[in-house]
Length: 360
Ligand code: BGC
Image 1 (cartoon, rainbow, N blue to C red):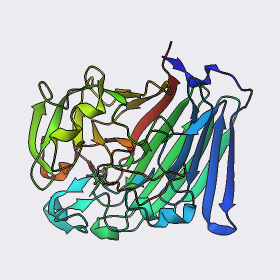
Image 2: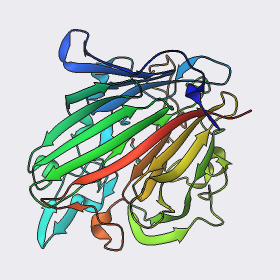
Image 3: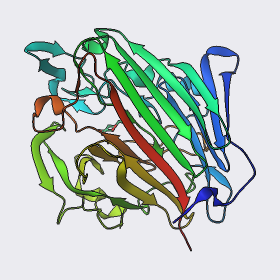
């Protein structure tokens, strides 16, 4: 594999922040470094577009997004957003910390999903820093979540830095502090289609995942607590495999919607989690993370009713999300890595999306 940025364009790193269509509340942020462009908005601290070159074509936007940034205020599929306070599900939206019971909002059957009714993904964030130099450019979005928001304990200050370096890598640094013990699990919910949505489906994309195990799910879509081997299942992506190989094997989900237990060394080092590639465009995305898990979700409920930024309808299996995360519902499974952040502690996690081209 080689970096997309090996094709020098002479464009140096730059960051711009502009109000959107005269609406001062909504910001349009653009990071450019060599020949990668990342566009973002402060609603949900979302990635709205990522333009990368293919082996034979020019820059194409390889993530799902709305053409009109106002649509991010109502974004039921979570295109590109930062999801929190707790990404994925909490069974019955109920948990206890130090003997105190908490009920957070229930917005997905009987479960709490992606931070609740108005999670971090649907809030206005503030741009608190922009930086650019020869090698990299970056923007920091911050959000203060009040004690009791969606039922969560504690005032939480959260920041997400997006930094684009000169080797085709987008670094996402998450940080948070709280004044009461609270669960926290932050991820980015971008959906990739490496053809730039020229092909309506991602089922021919190849995926490799550095995971020997996954968290088993119960019928209500939350972990049973069992950590099972991927061997002999459609979740074995230790060698690259097409996403088509198992998409029919999970009829209840209508595709993949599973949390991998990443093979990690001791500690929380930044390690390779997955490689997504697509042969006709030659594009690749390699995911590195400090987090213990990754949700694979193949846009199972896209139904063609939304015309995305690329001007095409987003249909079932049109995109694939690789959501680096803590395990779902960790608050109910003491043997899962803890997701409780205590006062005085710093939550810090990093995920990198590295954009490349398949070597000839
Ligand atoms: C979850 C799915 C959910 C989807 C909503 C994914 O992260 O795993 O279960 O339907 O988000 O867009």
